[in-house]
Amino acid sequence: MFSKYLTLIITAMTIGSTSAHEPTIVKLTPPLVSQETISQEIFCDRPMREGKFNISLDQQNGKTIVHCYGHGGSGWTTLFGSVNKAIQLFLETNPDKSSPIHVIGSGCMGLTTAAELSRLGYTVEKISTRSIYDNPSWRAAGFFALVSVKTSPEEQENLNNIGLDTFLTYQSINTGEHPYISKDAVRYLPVYCSSQTDAGVENLELAGLIPPREYVTIDFGNGTVHPEYVKYLTFFLDTTRLMRELTDEVNRLNIPIEIREINSFDDLPETIIFNCSGLGARDLNHDNAVIPVRGHLLTLNELSGSEHMDYMIYTKVKQDENDEYIYLFPKGISITPDKTSGIHCFGVLGGTFLPNMDHLSSDEQEAINQKEFNKLLERTQKFFQG
Image (cartoon, rainbow, N blue to C red):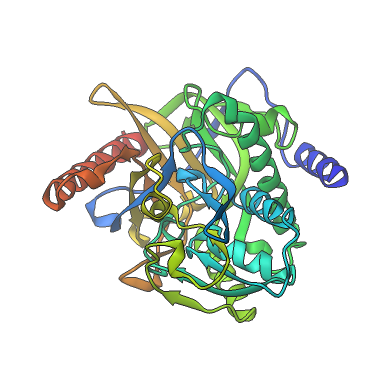
C-alpha cells in the first residue's frame, strides 16, 4: 500500500502545475445548450442512507448476510473501498470456499462484489436483481469526488479511507494495472468549481494525491465570464464502460444474473448472502434510514458541439434565490432501460438532489420532474451562454 501511495503522490506532482493565488484566465469552449441540443431527459433515484452507509455483517436465521448499500450519489467514488471492506468482514468469519454465495443487486456494488469473490476462489451461485439496466449505476455521470452522500461527522474518517482505497484502484486502472477493467474506463480531467462549492476532492489535495488547486477565471469566449473559480484534476469515470466491463467479467466468471425481486433473505437457499440491493434494502433489511434521492440529467447531442468533452464542471449557482447545482461531464454513451444498446451523446448536464419523492403520486412526480428539467435547462443555458 505504501509503494502505491508513494507512486500516486509522485504521479500527482507531475500531472499538474502548482497553483497560484492570482487567478489565471482559462478559455473553454462551452456546449451549446438549447431544446434542440438535448437528446434525453433522464432521472434516477440514488440510494442514500442517512448518517452512514451500511457495510456490516449479520447472522440471521442461520445465514451470514453481508450488507453493502446506501452510498447515495457516491457509489462509484466509494466502490472498491466499500467492496473491499465488506469482503474483509466476510473473510474474518473463515468461510468455506465451497459454500455457495448469493449476491443481491446488479449495480456497481453487486457486480464488483460478485467478481471479486469469484476471483478469490469463492462460489458465487448467482446475482439476483429487479432490473439489469434500471439502476443508478448505469445512469450516473461520474467523476471522482465524495459528494452526494449524507455522512455524519463521526463517519467522515471511515468515508475518507474508503474513498482513498477506491482512488488507488482507479489509479491502477488508469495505469493499465487492473486485472479486468481497461485503462480507457477512467482518465484524468480538470474539473472547475466555484470557490463556494465543496468539490469533494479537497482531502485528496491535502494528502498530495492530486495536484494543488489552481485559482482561475473561466472565459467561455462568448461574453460569458465566471471569476473566482477553482480548477482541480481528478478522474472522469466512464460509467457506461465501467458497467459494461464489470458485466463482461461477471459473464466470463460464469456467474448467472437472474431477474428476480427478493422480498426476504429466507427466500434464498444459500446461507451466505451479500446484500448490495441499494434502495431495495429499505424493505429487504427493514432499514428506514435508506431514502431515495432523485437526480435529473440532460444528455447532449451532436448539435451541442464536442470541444467541451475535455473538461468537467461541478458548481453551485443561484437560481430563484436558491443554491442549485450544475455539472457537465463528458459521458459519450447513455444507457437507460429503453435504450439498453446505448445512444451516443456529447456530454451530460445535471443535476439535482431531491429526497423522498417516492411519497408523491405519479402525477406529482411527473410534474416535479418536468419542472426540474426546465430549471436545469434554464440555468445551464445561462451559465454557458449568459
